[in-house]
Length: 77
Image (cartoon, rainbow, N blue to C red; front, top):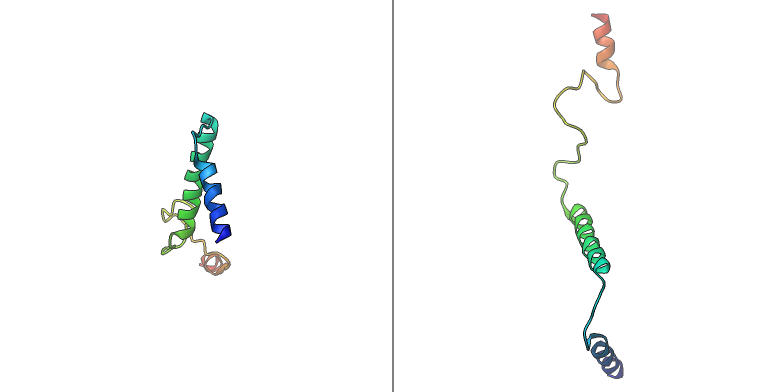
């Protein structure tokens, strides 16, 4: 009960009067909130199709990652 009264008095002291902040601090807080939202959104979004880096235009040049089976068959023919 005593702790609750102390916290209530502290909250009243913190929020009484006018609050002024420099313009740079205002923009810094805004940019931080936007970037935190982007990071949260990327972490919370489900990756249903996986992550693809590149254009994925179908130009693979008969490249199979980790094996050379097709390249050996092409050389024999």
